[in-house]
Image (cartoon, rainbow, N blue to C red; front, side, top):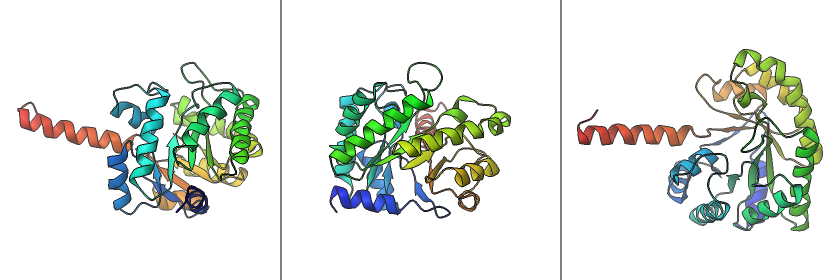
Length: 256
């Protein structure tokens, strides 16, 4: 398939109540393994990609290195590939769009794009984040390339007390509506794990909603019933792999 055909196929996978499952990878080798296991698309996780290269999350991996990893993953599979691009390595909307163009040029068909201030505190104001999304969308339109912008809000990730998540739903909906208006294609709410709250967002935001699996999160069937269209696993697969590797090495060296 061409890049455009892959993008169109990826868009079609996002169905409310019948979510696409993305088991996140971090390099070409893991992309091949996940693809061979029955995946319908490939997604990276920024934390995993950074850690596998010895970098910290939060755009610690240099942009040229990330771009080459994206290119190698695209080359390793015939499936659509979406890249977790954090904050696009820029605050300025035009600079962000230029950086996303580098990911588009690898053959990838989408990105995750978050609203937290990478390397700082808090979230970007709604209006600024909408302008950043809008600039990326204008760039993809000029390229005449379907490109899935999965707009992520870190409202829930920044609030570790799940008991307070209900009080953040209206703010999340406000962001989801603004991001949709700016040209986003999906709305990602990592760390939100209450099915009723997730359902409220799915009803109010006119975008496919993405939820991240984590300990304590509802199962896929429950998330589908809540209206979720995309389920991803974030750093979970990498952490499971490194935990297994550590135990195997400890057994070999007698330090278990």
